[in-house]
View 1 (cartoon, rainbow, N blue to C red):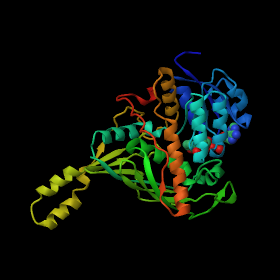
View 2 (cartoon, rainbow, N blue to C red):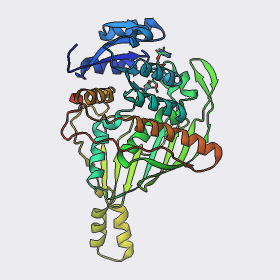
View 3 (cartoon, helix red, strand yellow):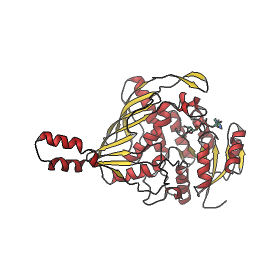
View 4 (cartoon, helix red, strand yellow):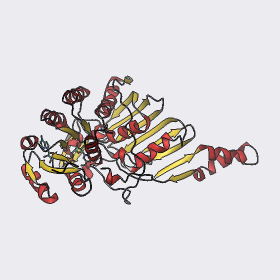
Length: 392
Ligand SMILES: NC(=O)c1ccc[n+]([C@@H]2O[C@H](COP(=O)([O-])OP(=O)(O)OC[C@H]3O[C@@H](n4cnc5c(N)ncnc54)[C@H](O)[C@@H]3O)[C@@H](O)[C@H]2O)c1
């Protein structure tokens, strides 16, 4: 095997596997995809044939392959813990689709096992490594909006059964809007603002009965989560994650600072449009307005749009702002192994996110504020000027 590449195996050949396999085979040159498996072998065979993967086999065979160093777990959330444990026990690094585990306890077990075995064990998402998340990270670190003091994070959609071919798992334990979509928002927030300190939340089930492939099914999990998070840095913000809302006029993620506001692209995407609102510019315009206080008030209201400007993406990415770069985190992890540096996605980050997701459930059930017990460092930002497809 080429020494500049890390051998990869994929377990789980369902809906999301296609984009990973395509990107790994076409773009991420430091990854060598050696084998794929699925509980249904024919799904693995079909994917292997479609994307030119050399081997389709059982999970046991894949885990017995010496050349496989990182295993990408693309199974459904309910089996993540058991499969991740198998991967670690086979002596391989884990890159798991989100969430790493359903419970904090299982997450801690995995992280301890990985430490004992000197292996990496992390979960998606890797969208925060995209040009949107990295550009916002840089502008925050450069103080463009002053000190972050607040945020709002909103994921409002009618539910994945509208488009997913096998959406049943989204309404089972381990999914729902918080466990399914929360990881994108929480990982982005931790990358931008640092770890979470406290969570206070409510849940509800606005539309608990869903039509899943022609059958009416009752959701096992709440379908709306609303809460407040206090970050360790002191910023406080609101969070809404919902599969009940047909349409809403809310930003995906906005961060409020002492000197302005930044509108962050959708944390589920790698890229997107960034807007920065410059508070000092508005202040000067209002100060220079002639007339009494009502003239100044009108200027403050009318000139809002003048001070809101598009901020250019600073990391070269694909021209298509919706481009799906899934696999970037695996490539980043492989590069960390090849160059013996720290990987940006860490076990501590994945575990912290698992605790945040659970914190919403626990706070809503108990009616009390949940104090986080885990923490993590902010992942290091990417080097400037890096073309994202060429992270290797
Ligand atoms: N579908 C998406 O758009 C999307 C996007 C981002 C992340 N994800 C995440 O990716 C993961 C998979 O989602 P999906 O939509 O591809 O689901 P899916 O149901 O379409 O595919 C899951 C695959 O895993 C296989 N599988 C299940 N249990 C297994 C086991 N024990 N051993 C081996 N294979 C097993 C299934 O047979 C299936 O082929 C989830 O964690 C999900 O949150 C999905």
